Length: 245
Image 1: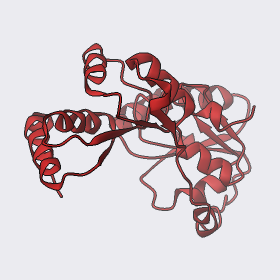
Image 2 (image 1 turned 60 degrees about the vertical axis):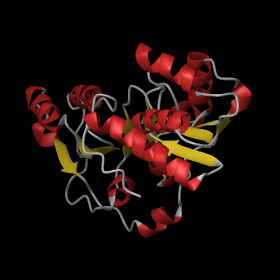
Image 3 (image 1 turned 30 degrees about the vertical axis):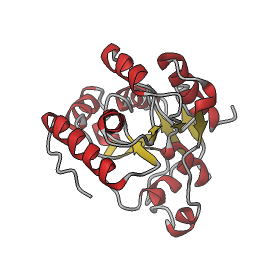
């Protein structure tokens, strides 16, 4: 069922449509994902006909906005359950929103290892004999590729290195400009969206996750499953539950 939400100002209409559907269908459980959708769904469950159990899935570091903090506390009932993608996300959510630990459950993101087998061989290096570093993720402040570019610029003073940057996002132009100012434009490949990123990751010498915060980073897990040496920031939360240092 499509809610036909086009922009943020359609939020109220989305809440009302969802509440009407819940009233019509009378489900026992309403499950929702993603921060904004969770809040809209939670509001819908409070004004609908019936009394379903609401189960929001928390996919990332919980929101830090005071307004949404207060809203979360008012939305969650004692009967509702929260699913978190990592133990630390669960702990942080309970602490921040006064949720009882027994009302949360941690379910790590699953991973289909057959994707590694189906990824195919890595990209040939050609005549390049230096080190290849790979990273993948949306080009956003959260993923902090800017810090990674600065690190590559420092390493490039001592050894031949290239960075394969997989992903698209709003910071593409800013990051490309930063690479030029750091003098490493020729060493950085902005690949954009790649249908088969694991083949490229598999061919790298090193995978780096430079995020400022995470939930349970699939990219890191996939790189490790490819058998590539991996480095991650110890950011809240997720990497600590994947990497054994």
